[in-house]
Amino acid sequence: MIRPPFLSTGDTVALAATGRKVSSAQMQKAMEVLSSWGLNVLQTPHLFNEAHGYLAGNDETRLRDFQQMLDDKNVHAIFCARGGYGTTRILDCLDFTSLLEKPKWIVGFSDVTALHLKLLQLRIESIHGTMPILYPSAGVEPSLESLKKILFGEDFTLQATFHKANRMGQATGPILGGNLSLLTDALGTSCEPDTVGKILVIEEIDEYKYRLDRMLTHLRRAGKLDHLAGLIIGHMTDIKDPDPAFGEEIAAMVMDKIDDTPYPVAFNFPIGHENPNLAWRHGSLMSLDVNPTGSMLQPATGLLREAYIIGPGSKK
Image 1 (cartoon, rainbow, N blue to C red):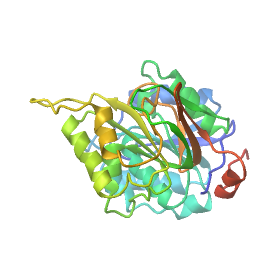
Image 2: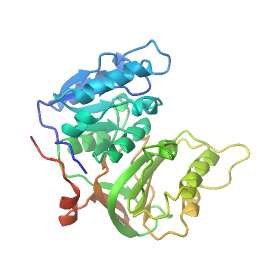
Image 3: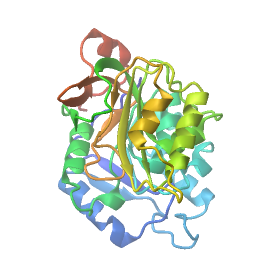
């Protein structure tokens, strides 16, 4: 995997919208936070485009803006402004030649899961973490602290409280995933992930239980849950029950799909559409420990890690 250089004070970063539109007022807090980290913050030319309904401009405009930031050699990280929908509409038209020549961090989650999966195909690490639209939200401080640590190359560990459905064990492998809807959407595309030997992360928001079950079943039928190194379940936010009720709890739903597999499974991870939404490096080699007191996720160490990373991954 290629690891982009970590950030240093004085670096230039950019805010960009690949999907749903944002306003100047919604980005004000992000401008303040990133500036307080010693970063120079650019905005894409049409970041506050209000003329295309739900999206932050038409596909051509969003594509051109994001491509400009990918190609700008002075930009060291791109923060995707928010999720929603729209990233997949431009994904296949992006040219990543400049990014491969001069890697930079791409940051986001939710709809940006599609972009993370594309970068995984290119063997470039990215950051799954909170987005500028959420910087003003209550309880966001741990999410921002973890994001800053990763961006500036500090050590990080994610911990989760015990859950009765956890399956104990340890695992080491490349980590991937994010939003369950986007993972399922990637199946059958050029961004379909290879999950064999990987630690898979899933989180979701605002879905009915039967739809959640359908997506998990889809992953199972596609063989994506068969040979994992480990499975992490993040926030399942605002999951609704239909009338009549679906009749199965989320943990039971998940475990039913993987009852014939041996790998560790960890629920309650602080990842997804609630705070804290702790940051992690998508595509990085990680170690997962699930034990009777809780779960822990941290970067792998030793010779295996050194062989896995071929990018700079250091201060400039």
